[in-house]
Structures are given as structure tokens and as C-alpha cells.
Length: 277
Image (cartoon, rainbow, N blue to C red; front, top):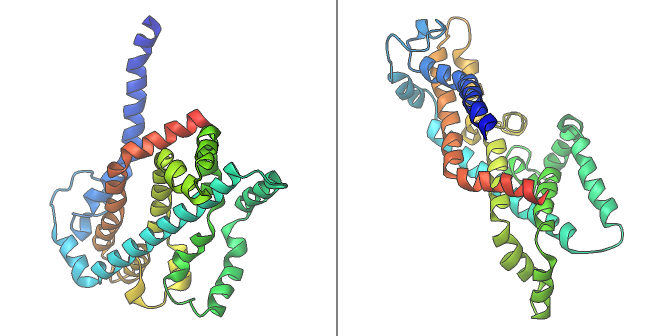
């Protein structure tokens, strides 16, 4: 107990130091976004002059509202489809006993070893053949087939559930869908939230797919729109980095809010995964 009492201040100091390191870039971004253009890169954490008009300027310079709506729609669709599809596949691997189950699951996990750049061109050709290459559909519809990482994560949670619950429900006449929807999903709600938040964040901050598929500025997501703003205001003679940084803050804030709203379920999901793993 004495050793723990002595170590606790050191742990707090280490945590505070790590927090400062991780928070400093965002603090700098927030500070630079409210500075005049000539003071953006002066390395001062506290601005000498606060210019809130940078945020009003970005709304006038670009259709930020439309980009925000597109990002919300695409991210929610991607997170929902990834969570539902991956949980269905994960439950199948956890509950059903069939020949070759482990080999098939290993094959699913092996797809995690494929870099995204390897499948980028074949996937684009598939969407192009379907006539959807210039729409927002490729940004989320690929999740209808699940994700190997999320399948692995959710399978571990489902394996931690007592099998007797499912067997008793089967004796009472419950269907396989009832086992999944009425028993597995409520008991693994934290894991579902973790999956949803992970994919929501990944889709929200994704720039590569919008760069590949989106051509119409009206369909841009926030990261793609921010890239367009950077190309516009980052050129020599037209440099207005304060506008670009204000857009970066607008892109970052929603995910911070989502994390704080889902923090309890997120932490519960991670701790439950450690116990069941």
C-alpha cells in the first residue's frame, strides 16, 4: 500500500504530461484558427488578436453546410452498415459449430493483411462497372460485407457469453435471429458501440475514398472539402491558412463531441473486451 501511495503521484504526473503532449497540437490548431493571417505561424499558443471572423469567412467561402451534411450521412451509413454486418458474421462464427469454421475465420482475418492500396483499383473498377463510381455509395456500401477487424472484435465478445443462455432459448423455441437480436446484442451493447464509434471516426476522417470517387463539389465530405480549400487558399499569392485551419477545427470538433457522448459505453466496451479476451 505504501509503494502504491508513493507511485500514485508519479502516475499522475506521467498522465498529465502525456495529456499535454496529445492536446498541444489541437490547442495550437484552435489558437491558429482565430489568428490574423500574418500571425498564424508565429508559434504563440495564445493569440495576440482573436479573429472569430475566420469561421464566418469559411462559411461564405465554401458550402460547408452541405459538406457537413454529406459527412454526417456518409459516416452514419458507414458506421451502421459496418456494425450490423460485422456483428451478424461475428455471431455466426461464435455460435454455430460447422466443419471448417476455424479455417474460414482464419481466412477472414487474413484479409486484414492486404493493404488498401492492393485492392484500390479492383474495387474502383467494380463500382465503375456498377455505375456508382462518382457517387457517395462506395464510401459506405463496402461495409455491407463487414470488416475483418470488427468481426474479430465482436466475435470475442460473443464467445464470452454463456452458451447456456442460447441453448435455453432454443429449447423455448427461439429462432436464430431471436438469439442474436434479443440475447447477444443487448449483452454486447458496449462492443457494438465501440465498433460504431471506431467506424464513425474512420469514415468521418477518411480523405482517400472521397478523393477517388467524388467529382461533384456538392457531394464532397468535410475532409474532401477541406482539401479543396487547402488547394485554393494554400497557393502562393492567395495564402489564407487561417481559413483552412478554421475548417480543420470544424472537421475535428464533431468527433470530439461524439467521443464524450459515447465515452461511458466506449470505456465499458474496452474493459469488457479485456475480461472476455
